[in-house]
Length: 179
Image 1 (cartoon, helix red, strand yellow):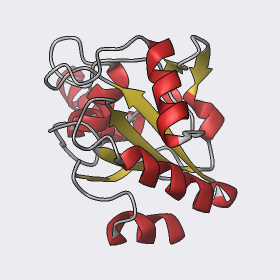
Image 2 (cartoon, one colour):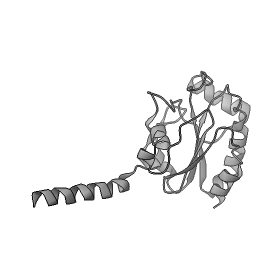
Image 3 (tube, one colour):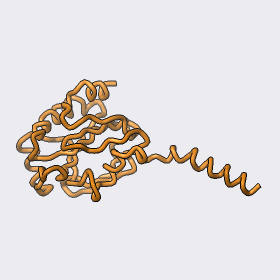
Image 4 (cartoon, one colour):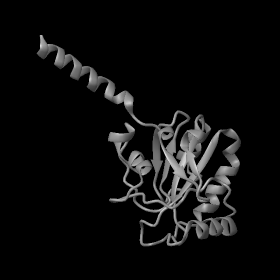
């Protein structure tokens, strides 16, 4: 009797484990201005999360990201930029320097967060969730370089990702936003 109850309890635990997956809304971040932000503020919006860098060959994507944001922000869409210095020291600046660079050179108005690590031993918990199927329930996606883009649906679930070299206006991203 005890054994069958234990087996039943274990089965129920495993059955419900999938339902306990975190969403974007379970995380907090710090804005580039140093203010804490609960990512549940983006509930009901499609969110494109991008790890950025100011001294990378892909840095001009800031211009496309800003254009994408301007085109779709009225349609419950937002971009969150997360500066990271994980690839060849291509984001060495302070948050203040990064903010100034983005505003002056690319007119960035989408929300930028404080610099974090997107891989390795010091990986930010949000990026651990974005990149590990065991945490997001959908996919594994190692961050391969600056400007990798993660697509999060209106329910805070990871949907897909786009490679760093893929344009913010790629068919994949635009169709996801529009559908």
